[in-house]
Length: 242
Image 1 (cartoon, rainbow, N blue to C red):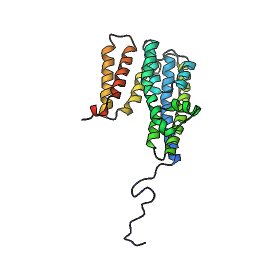
Image 2: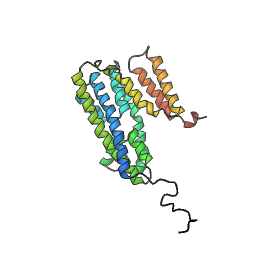
Image 3: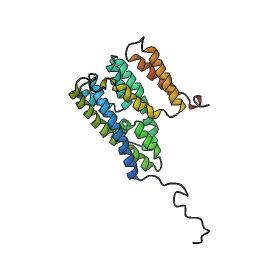
Image 4: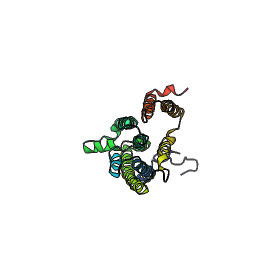
């Protein structure tokens, strides 16, 4: 080969990195699941501290399986809000998972029982992983499943550890569990504040909750804030970008 000939660009072209291997996708999925499992320990402890027993706490993680909704549910109950407000708020916050399921359907092409399991695993992290590894489609499916299964396993394990630990502690104020709900929700929210739209929605929802808190029963201001966030999130993106 002459020295004047350009170097081989390979399959992916010059300067273009090949897609990650299955091992790399798996490692990323495990790291996401481990971090989420740590949040689940907080959730399990907080849920028991607000009055749920271990089985009720674990059932929520098994069937609801969406961190923001679970934290909101136990947070409203712990603040003295009613069951209706807690359930409606959890449903509103979890509604986005239904949208994820619809958007992932053409990619995953699930049938039968796998479709039900896939719908349960369609959350923020699995959707992000599936989209991040969109090509080839087999890798996208692999990223979704490996992330979802690890997340489900470690989220429920973390819930059990936290719930059992809280039953031993007894008083939620002993280690600050009575103030942990707000901290956990902030930790879930903070990584999503990546642009002007998310900041605007968050501040608007928080403002509504702050204004309504002195005049409404516990839980209702959070429900109102969730409605504001849901409506704002459905507005066209161009309204937030100038």
